[in-house]
Length: 205
Ligand code: ADP
Ligand code: AMP
Image (cartoon, rainbow, N blue to C red; front, side, top):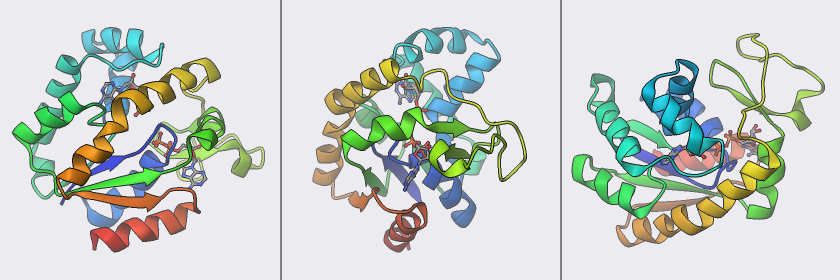
């Protein structure tokens, strides 16, 4: 089961991917998470990635594609994977087609006007869970593992606006790319987390 979760920043890809990975026993591969891990460890990739991520721009394709190519070649991807945040432009999608066969592309659709609030209110945990301040009732720790929650450095209003415009210009054309390939499934992302999950699992079987 090789699946891509498509959707704008804040659409709920990470939230759903964590749950789907658990249900289907396949790895959740988020290029954003890989970059943030590299930034934390101050690797050469991390240093390059940070300069783009801080501005809300895409990390160059040659870096990103290579990371995904190596990751998908690992043993735990034999029975499938969930890609979150990749591909993000047509070049990346064409490159992915050269080294892996994607079966389904789930597009989580949320009105762009609602995303700014979703992202600026996002609080994340080291364990991979993400939450929204509106539902935390003042809590500052993770329900799942108890760690202190924090806000991503790029979840500020100015950077988010750039990320949303990058999405519209570079990533949204992938909807048509995968529609033409007969792989696209459209999911209404403006519903409860449980309902979105139910709709996705219905289409994945
Ligand atoms: P993405 O990975 O697509 O950038 P996330 O999964 O991190 O998005 O979700 C962004 C924010 O929106 C988080 O604060 C998350 O808790 C919240 N969120 C996710 N799904 C929903 C939903 N169905 N309804 C309301 N808020 C949601
Ligand atoms: P995300 O965690 O998916 O919201 O991604 C955070 C940031 O990482 C993005 O704003 C980009 O700067 C960078 N990034 C993540 N995935 C990619 C990708 N496929 N191509 C280029 N840059 C990416």
